[in-house]
Amino acid sequence: MVKKINLWEKEIQKNNCEPFERLHKFLQDNETNLSDFTKLKTQMSQHLNSLQVGIREYFPPLDKQYNRIRYPFVVDATDTNLTIVEKEQLIEVSSDPTLKNKYLSSGNTLLNFWIGVGKEHKEQSSTAGKFLVGFSTSYLCERGFSSLTYLKSKYRNKLNVEDDLRLYLTKLESNIDELCKQKQAHPSH
Image (cartoon, rainbow, N blue to C red; front, side, top):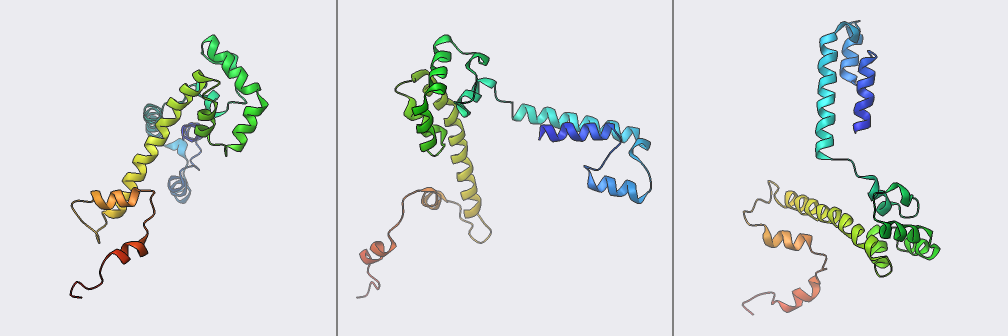
C-alpha cells in the first residue's frame, strides 16, 4: 500500500490524476487539467503523506533480521544483526540439504519447520517461534471476531453467545446421530 501511495503522489506531481478515476473523469468532462488546481494538488499530497505515515505507524516494516525466519535458505547471515552463535547457526541451517528437504516436506509451513529444527539449532528456533506465534494469535482473534459477527446477525440476536461461540470455534466434530440416540424423542413415552 505504501508503494501505491508513493506512486500516486508522484503521479499527482506530474499532473496525472489517472489513479483517481472520479477526479480524472471530472477533469476530462470539464476539459481542464490538474495543473490548474495547485491548492488541490497540495492538499492531495499532504493527505497522501499523512496516510503513508499512518500506515507506517500501524504496520511498521519488518526488520531484515526476520527474513532469516521467513526465508531460511536464501538469507545472507552477514547482513543480520545477530550474535556470532546465531550467525553460525543460520549458516548451518541454510547450508544443510537435509534441513532443506525437511522444510520442503513440512508443507512449507514455517512454524512446523522451526519446531522441528529446535533440537539442533535452539537459538534460531526460539527466535522464530516468538516471531511466528504472534501471527497465529492474531489469526485466532480474527477468527473469533468473524464468528461473533456471524452469530450476532439481526436474525439471531442473543445477549449471551458464549456457548454458541465456543461451539462455532471448536475443531471437534459433533456426532449428531449418537447425541440423538441418547435422547428420547417424546418425553410422554
